[in-house]
Amino acid sequence: MKQTTIAVLSNSGGAGKSTLVRNLAYELDRSGLQVALLDLDPQHNLDLFCGLDVEIPMIDTIVGMLGEKYDRDWHLVPVPNEKNIHVCRGHLGMAELQNEFVARRGSEHILANKLKKKPLGHDVILIDCPATLGKICENAVVAADYVLIPLILQDKALTGLDGLLNWLKYLSDDLNLQPAPQVLGIVPYAYNEKSQTHRQCMEQLKFVAARARLRMFETIDNSLEIMNANGNGLAIGKFRPVHKTVEQFRNVCQQLLQTIG
Image 1 (spheres, rainbow, N blue to C red):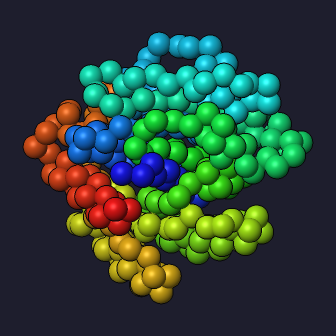
Image 2 (image 1 turned 180 degrees about the vertical axis):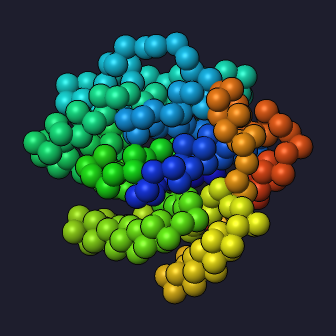
């Protein structure tokens, strides 16, 4: 397949971005694809979720990769016990790097230019974005073919969805992105069917998605086992192979592959 870059983006914290990236990577790997994960989030949760507990120098993280004077090949770390998943690790210094971006010419294109100059050989690149819609997220959108939006079911997140979609459109128009990345759709995250609030939010979300002509992907249920899997550095499919959310992540992956071909 042609290499595909997907930015996993949400403008609210706790929406499950890193969890979705980790578990999609696992399912894509199971499908025989090579996957690269780029961790742009200063919280760098992917380190924990991928079982990467050994510290490495900042120059070998995403901060070093995107620094002004860095021109070496990508530093990718293999995920333990996975066949074809590699991570460009995140770092707290990403917050400071974002301030540096403001002063750099064409700062929205730094990541895209890096990927063109030093291309990765993976089938799919998943970009884990921070929750703040600043220069870092702009870089992710410019570099991406597609955007995937995980959304936690609460009123604040639903209100913010319109703002996120408007921001994406404004950015694409302002930078004249040709083509602009396609929004694949929304992945509802941490859903509790027994919660009336969640059920009401789900109905509102379906309405918003239909109005915006966005696909609703498989819903991921709220589960403590997902958190336990993350804490153990494993995808839920490896941590609890028969857990109900394994099939849900697998369905999201299959829906994704059908959409991007």
